[in-house]
Amino acid sequence: MATLADLCPVQQIVLDAPLTDRNALLTYCANLAAPATGVRASVLLQQLQDRERIGPTSLGRGVAIPHARIAGLAAPYLLFVRTLQAIDCDAPDGKAVQDFFVLLMPAKTVQLHLQVLADLVSALHDRYFRQALHAATSAPAINLLLSSMPVRTLAQRQQQEARA
Image (cartoon, rainbow, N blue to C red; front, side, top):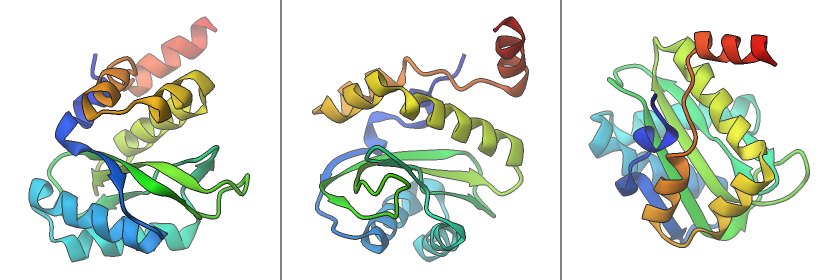
């Protein structure tokens, strides 16, 4: 079974990014993702900004998942960024955000996009996972933590719900 670590390898984990606002974060992430995805940074940035204009992607509790579906993107791309300073992201609880998962998905993978978002949200709603994530001090430690979080298909999710 695939895990979040499969989508977010060590080289896509950034700690202590010196960013101070949401636009700087999105620009930084677009510039990091562009070479790996083959999509221009300006396209990635525009799609991320467009999504943020619809509504903030902060979940509260110091975490956010900026995300977008991208035309021309061949495969899912997940980036984790922890900033040196917490950034105001209009979180529902008013808490500034320091831990960001940036999810870029191919435009045509609507169902997979929603599934990965659901798995990220589920993980980030777990207090112990959030605490372990924020306490991790290296990219390999975060990747190891992500390896414990499966990316479930819709069928797997429905089977799990039926058993509950």
